[in-house]
Image 1 (cartoon, one colour):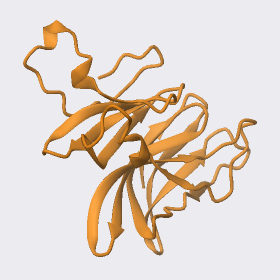
Image 2 (tube, rainbow, N blue to C red; image 1 turned 60 degrees about the vertical axis):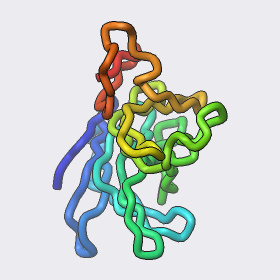
Image 3 (cartoon, rainbow, N blue to C red; image 1 turned 90 degrees about the horizontal axis):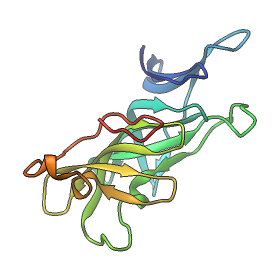
Amino acid sequence: SVAYGVSNAGLVVGMAETAAGTAPFYYDTTAVSPTMVEIPAGTVDTGDIFTRRLYVNEQGFAVGQAIYRDSGVSIIIPVGWQLQDSQGDFIVDPDVVPLADLLEEPGMPGVFTGVGSALAINAFGNVVGSSNLVNGGDRATIWSLARDTIDLNDVVDTTGTGWTLQFATGITNTGQIS
């Protein structure tokens, strides 16, 4: 087993070996009798999903990167799961939520392919990672609760002139991105 993320509320997410193979899991360290619970990988548009990494915030929303297999083709897409409801109770059999619909925003048509990785999430649900461009290459990306998709190269200040940001790997609750 490998833990990739832990929230301030004590929710751990990661990957574990099961009888069926490697699967995503969560583990509530605050429970009276903590147990590791498998997160259903799910399907998107009839394609199977295999999760690779997970990160979690204080509201019990986990994000990660998944291999999406459809018609013999495999691509990496950013995905998420709501693991807890607003009262902090765990959701039985949470649905996988592909973030791919956030990659094609008005004002940015045809820019992103839907391929990418969700690599971190803050307490407010802002997700950072990378998105693959239609014309090739990766761009550091943020997806916000407002359903905005932003190429971080478009908002870097003048000290970053000439840089190409390909991946964002962390975001604080104050919005600082690494």
